[in-house]
Every structure is written in C-alpha cells, then in structure tokens.
Length: 445
Image (cartoon, rainbow, N blue to C red; front, side, top):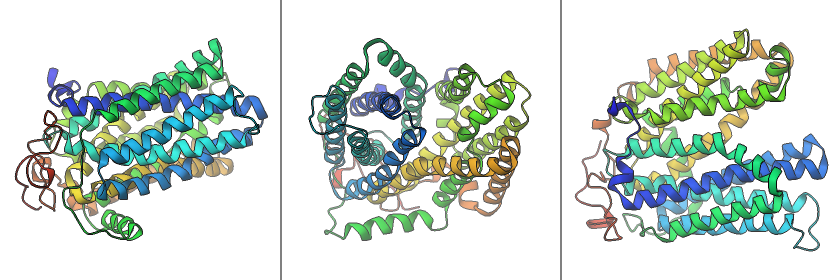
C-alpha cells in the first residue's frame, strides 16, 4: 500500500530539491492568488467581461515568450541565476500591483497598468518555469526524477484547488491591497529560497551561439520522430480536442440549473481528482512504462469528456470531471518524467520550455475550439465529438509511435552522456565531477 502513495524521497534525500520545491509551492500559490485578485480588480473597475477576458490575453503571449527565452537561457547560463532573475521580476510585478491597488502610484489609473503588470509577471513566470523544471534533473537522481515531477504536479493541483478559495477569503475580509501584500510576501520568500540554491551551470562550456538559432534547434528536437514528439502529440490531442472548461457555464445552465455554486463545484472537481491522484502517484513514478501510462491517462481523460457529454445530473457531471482530473494528472506526471529522463541536459531547458508552452497554449486553444463548436452544435455534441476525436488520436499515436509505446524508464539515457545517477551534491553546493555531473556520464541511447 505504501508503494502506491506519493513518493516523498526527493524531499527527504535532497536538501536542494526540498528548497526548490518549497519555493515553487509558494510561487504557485502566489500565482493563483494573483489570478483571482486581478480578475476581481478588473471586473470591479470595468464591469466588462471583455476586459476580464483581456487578462488572459495579457498573460498568455508573454508567458509563451518568457518560456522560450527562459529555456534558451537555461541551456547557456546558470539555471539558478535565470530563476533568480525571474523571481526578482515576479516580485517586482506583484509589488507594483500592490502599490497600484493602494493608489500609491500617481498618474497610472485604470486597467492598462494592471494588464501591463500582469504581462510582466507572466513573462517572468515563464522564464522561471523553464529554469525551475529543467533544474530538477540536476538536483535528484534519475531513479527519483519521476517522483520529483509528481511532487511538482501535486503542488500545481493543490494551488489550483485552495488558491482561488484563499484569494476570495482574503479579498472579502481585507480587500485587494492586503491580498496583493500577501502575494508579495509569498514572492519574496520564494525569492529567498532561490538564493539558498547552489549554482547549476551548463554542463558543457559551449561557444556562444545565436539565441534564436538555439531556440529553433530546441523546437526541431521536439518535432523529430521519437518518444518526445509522441509525448507532446498525445498531450496536444487531449487538450486541443477535449478541453471542457469553456463549456462549463453552458453545461451548468442547461443541465444543472445555472447556480454559481454548481459552477464552482465543476471547476473544483478536476482539481480534487488531480490532487487525490497526486497523493496516490507512487505506482506511476515507480513504473517503467511511462509512455503507455501517458497514453492510457490521456485516453481516460478523453473518455471522461464523452461521459461528461451525456451525464444526466450533478453527480454524473462531477464524477466525470473528477475522473478527468485524475487521468490528466496520471498523463502529465508520466509525460513530465519521460521528457526529463529522455532529453539530454544540454537541451533540457529548451525542451522543457516547449513543454511549458504547450501546457499553457494547448488548453487555451482547446477551450477556444470547444466554444466555437458548441456555438454551432451545442455543448454535449461538442464534448462528445472532441472526446471521440481525441481517442482516435490516442489510437493513432499508440499504433504509429513505437518509441513512445515501448519506452521504458530503464532504457532512457541522455544523448550527451549525462545520467545524473548520483544526483546533485547539494551539501557541497556544487555539482560534482566533470562538467557538474556527480559522476561519469551514461551511455547514449
């Protein structure tokens, strides 16, 4: 039974990873609090749903740009330094939001400064995500890398589950300025956690190269045939074809009576399913067949969307969404572990940045597609059609992508020789061995 629970050995065995994880947890909660506070502030100032929609637009494109830039920097610079730059930028952005809400900055009234600060916060968050996620493989051993990915996913779901509720309580009790002040404190503590991390420099001192060329090289690496392309393709099929969030209001009105409480339950159900699965993720992180697990998880997600299309009442709808959230967590943990295990450290930042960009853009585009289709055929048909197309996509990838289908964790080895089998020398504050690795490199795969 204990083997099925969340594997916490990375937190116990690696002080450096524990510091990174604690800082990341605070940053994740600060991010969720910021989303709620900004949406509330913009709505209160404008009473215009178009302007609240602009919040998402102001965040999405800077996040994509920040991720790609952060990925390239993470492959050419000290990843701790990149993360430090990002943490300083995020802290400055949320401090600006706090000052703006308290009317302490003259001449910057209205929504425009808020959207600009949201964009700055999102850009630096993208930089930090690429550096943070590519750093993990240098802080823990290869054996514990899937467990470290699962711990990160648990933080994501916990922040998504509790962050909005906490934000609502803070705004209701003390107002926006206090809420932004709490966010700023969280960001400062997360920044201090980064300062406690050791340097994580590139393993090979390559000659300086054109950043755009390096970014393009990372994109080409992702699109070449193999397990990585299959893993990203699986995620894109699931999000582009079967993303349901944009249809929640329509489903709530047509099937559940339109109460805001039921809409909130729908929004929380996936996070609940994901959180529970994260706590019980031990079997996933210890498994060898990460490719098959990812495809299975994405397939269950797609089937749950078909079930959601025909769910007759609240219990059926909530159950389908909880199953979808659990399946999504299974798929994302498996994909994250596979990607981190398979890519060489010299490209880990850039490929991780593409992973982050897909995670941000895929759901947004999937929701846009779902809304457009539902406007023509209705929410049930849109969900059923999207879920079915996603299932067909899973079958195609399962049939055609042998590398993903047969991927085994024990077979994975970085192409540039880094294995990380001995982890990271956190006590010494530096990576041991040549180029920063704690021992000899692994054989190429």
